[in-house]
Each structure stands twice: as structure tokens, then as C-alpha cells.
Image 1 (tube, rainbow, N blue to C red):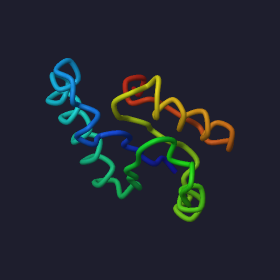
Image 2: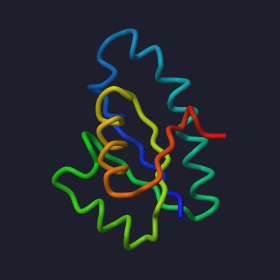
Image 3: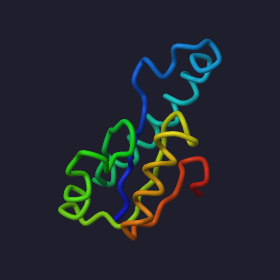
Length: 101
């Protein structure tokens, strides 16, 4: 089962004008993904940092039967990348929203 993980969408991440300029498109895209996941009753998770650090996220994924993650958010070179690496180490398939078909 596929799960959507929305990472780093807190206001602080958009404190610089160049980041703030990305909000409309980013929010529209995330809202569209969220709507689809709700429609198909697929799990959605919100997070900061690596989702796996200091949380029971791994247990939540297992309980929901999630084996694949679709990651979206602000910093691919930060928290999204950390989450992707941690997910891969746990044997989960990872796709970034921009790479999704």
C-alpha cells in the first residue's frame, strides 16, 4: 500500500521571499495529492525532520500495511532526503512527488 508523507510545510520553512514565492504551487500540488489519497482511502502522514527519528512512524506504517512512500514537501536536500534514506534502509519503496507518474 502507498502512503503519502508531507514534510516540512511549517511556516518557518517559508521565511525567505524565494521560498514564500513557491507556496501557491506547492500547496496546490499537495492539496491535489491529499485529495486523491483521501478519495482512495490511502494513509497520509505529516512530519518534520526525518519522519523516522524519535517517532513511532515505522510502527504506524506497518500497522497501515504501507510498503511504498510518496514524499512531498520543501527541502529535498534536507528532511525529505533524510526521510527517503531512512525509508530505503527499512526496505520501503520511495518516490518523490515530482517523479511520480
